[in-house]
Image 1 (tube, rainbow, N blue to C red):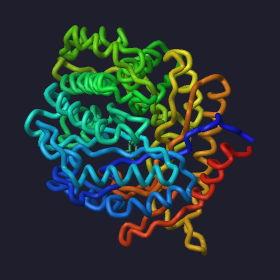
Image 2 (image 1 turned 135 degrees about the horizontal axis):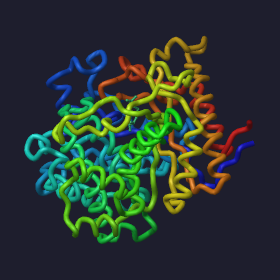
Image 3 (image 1 turned 90 degrees about the vertical axis):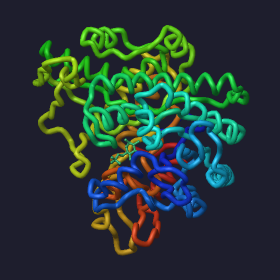
Length: 464
Ligand code: BG6
């Protein structure tokens, strides 16, 4: 039997924009807006309007989550639902009440609410008016919004998370064009990364100076870590992998946990003429406001080889001028999602956190397997027999268990996700849930993995 530490968090993650639907929301975020103007960019033209209807069905959904054995759930508060006026951070009462209801229902069900404050859902008005995360004005408006969240829910919520996957914001909006506004501008991408780090530190500062940590409440952030492995031992590949790691992982991990950016990366960006604009005062703020708890989203590793792109000037700068993705022969793939499956990376992440990040408490805040057309696995009883998801989770937990045995301070495992939900431009193509959702009828049914997960949670582990 593989037993996990006592009080291990067995749970899942979701997000406001992917679950709630746009019902009664006073503002549009960047995805809402993008869908309004270019619905054809979304799989089957399905947008975020209904999502998984959590706004209307949160009570029933939370009941299903309980049936799947969750003892904790990460939700996110949407800036565009809670706030009426972004400049003053005045409140939208319907939004205020909705999040009270959700948090109360979770607590009544014995599910610990973990609350995120930004899950790719920048208000589009703030992009059009100020350039979104390009602007430090937006950083300050965001902090005002987070202070409202702490004041409203701080007595009930023990675990707060400032950002979800900031690297995806940088990549999607400013480099590889998969989030509105789909820009390609390396210099802006670097400034946005910096401003998000600054916003994280300022929010943590506001949390602590406001006394919201008074009863042991903790604040952290959620990073998608993708350990980088070189294609070979050749110096060129080793260098490519090192820089990929600096950019993809350390850019956010180092300031969050250690309070400073990796000097190697700062030197590289300086030499290339694309370093962010910052002040000495901000540097001190970042140093002094590091996280209590780290959330790690792990889906796939990254493999790097010597790059092929040679930029002609600083204005063409892109991080991948330093590394190319390497497709290792015979690697295991999740064909639907196009991602490599490499559970051992969770062990490598565990040791990296133990050895290089002061063994900070952390948890797997997302891990999961997206599969299309899951109806093909429906059995005679009408249940989806997702044996592949059970195997996937089990293998990841085995490697995580080894990491914990080696002394890494991992406190939990959250699957992406409890109930099949809407997923950005992929909409409902790939399903991740322990519970299926028929998007035409919104009928939700536990999959085989839901029953299995409940046993794991109740036993605090599983047999080999
Ligand atoms: C993470 C995000 O990147 O991966 C989630 O935090 C997202 O919001 C999940 O849904 C799965 O990715 P995708 O693109 O398959 O939905």
